[in-house]
Length: 369
Image (cartoon, rainbow, N blue to C red; front, top):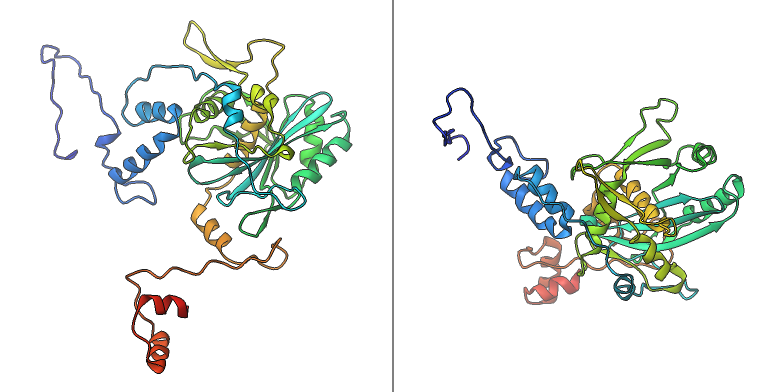
């Protein structure tokens, strides 16, 4: 249809110039990897629009080439978020078990004068997240001791519902305050994904890199710069979701996890400001309001953005099987592979069935397997 189309002048009285309006729906380029056509790609994206208004705006701007009216995300009331918490599974000694859907763990850390605040976050397919634990480490953040305690906590192996033991892939630490102490810690973690991060004003379209390595050659391996305003909007947009699924943010009600009313006050503490020139940014409305929890969540999500593309299906298949030696925390027997109606009887099954005189039924094949 696109190749057979032609440009039609709707204002023929203008002779010396031409104006065009086109969007991505007329694209004739090859679809992205994993899609069979542009229509397939668009249909998949439209399903993900349920993740919140941030994604709706990105679709209207980037695909339909239409303007979008900015409507500031109003943070959800604290009591609503508290009521939305879930009870995670625990071991007999009270340790939280990482939910089955979680594929990757990351840690975000905010540095203050007398404490480090950190969150372990689990990420599942389609942007669904599971808060695992929020922890505060008190101490002088100029000294190494507090970072050692943080590191021991962040590196601990956690029990996954599948029976595997998993641990965080990335640790992102805010280096806007006491930068040298943070850099000293990140440089000491040689061979691990432990990064210093700095937040910068700015927005980034959906699908582009909202976090990038620093241009400073001396810091390139340790420092990432993130456009935090777009990330905050994404968090607030997804907090509006009420049904578990793509983009939904899960929080545990388990007391040991640390997600109390104070946490939810902090994560909803910032508001959107629009200047006369149209510049948009999120800011804390008063000096009495704390927002460490929000900063920590953005840093934990930044950790996911620093990773290569995650193959969620492959990770799910791996968790469905028995853990290798040293990677299990309990006996785990994988569920039997279901027999589909299209599955044919194998030679081995057929010989055994005929030998015992059993009928050729799917139930027999399933029981035999």
